[in-house]
Image (cartoon, rainbow, N blue to C red; front, side, top):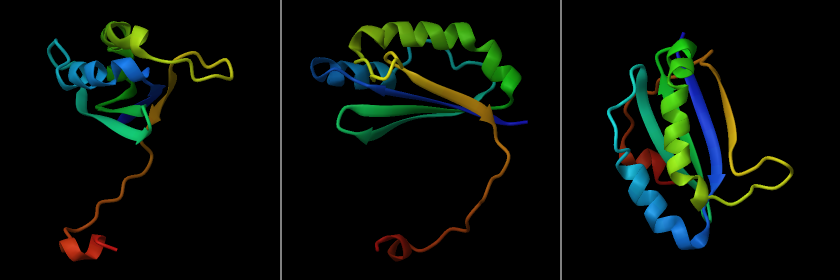
Length: 110
């Protein structure tokens, strides 16, 4: 069954440009089983990485690659507080999906 992982992080101000540049070019082949990856800006210097995987097994076997990628940026990240360290990861199986028909642009313009 399809799975997703999400990792929340906050970037130190002096590293934000470099962090974005590194995330635009992973520097390695795409990991087997990874369907989509997104880096979402969620606030001032806060981001969430979202990965969509073929299965929990594919996500689990990617662990060493994910750790290497996080090692590339760990010095750029601030502690999130509350004992979380600099990353707040979560993952699990996708249990529901909704697909929406293509809607005209003005539908979304509020």
